[in-house]
Image: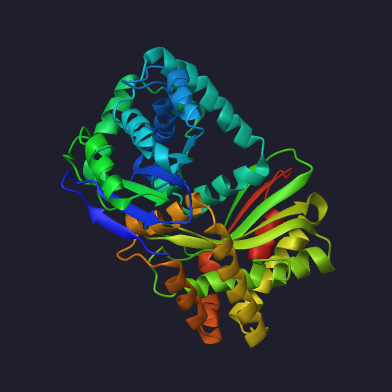
Length: 424
């Protein structure tokens, strides 16, 4: 799978990944800004603006007018906001690529931002915030990042708070858009069956109106002052306890990141992983237990999520913690076969994901935005294959220490003292 990355004469970055066997194409506009670029006052504005782009643009002044065009070509379109980027996409037949460029460029460059639409959408977003609050499997990630990244804008929720959303005005959107929605801060990706020359021509044609940037994003860097285990309880009357137990790790460009990812896979990356077998199969303490890596440009964490029986949650946390420390202390070394299985698990999941143009888009563009070089899937597979047992154990010893340890809990508890005792 090959790619091409070019900076066009107008300052836009164009990333293309041709897949000639496909008759569909995914066009995505990426803006390198998200909730990490916010503060407590405007928290949620990246996500709110993402919503407003769909409410009407210069050529198509209503949400209905926009959706009719996309429906008219049998396409699908949506958007997403993360902590470090916002994106907008249309997936359609290859012959309708110009229509996709026409619609997306107008939405992103010329949203109308009607005051009445802003006021109406506030209610929608506040209900979205409440939905997350009532869905602990989704909310626990926010609680954990509030804990592990406290004191940083990374701790802010992507959707914002009811207060910050309620107070937003049209001028807030205009100033935020001016600050981050400019050519040098935009990447256009085109993935699927298309002509590369045509993609370049369409990018120049439809995004020439995008303003140049007057301000380059300041480089954000997370700094921690953590020196001992931290715990955060989000008390909620629920029939199940949800936890994430995790440790500060490293960012997207850390040289041994594949060793860290394999460490997460050995611990809780599948139904034959250590934690799945110990916590669920042998002891019946959880329905769901999994370990994964979560990374930003400069920082990240390795975290284990579990949904637990309320009465047995503290026991389960102790067992999960013990499994981490066994690896850190080499009490239970990784065998060659266990490491090989983890490698095949990772490569297999990536290969399956890359059968969809949306996942191909994310794979390449995430690297284009945040890494000094872009690797192809085959190059990633090679990096995974090169990891040695000693490198994985080195990361376990380095990461699984009390001064990096964090525990977030959602459950019906008055205080966290039982859990805090375990962490000590």
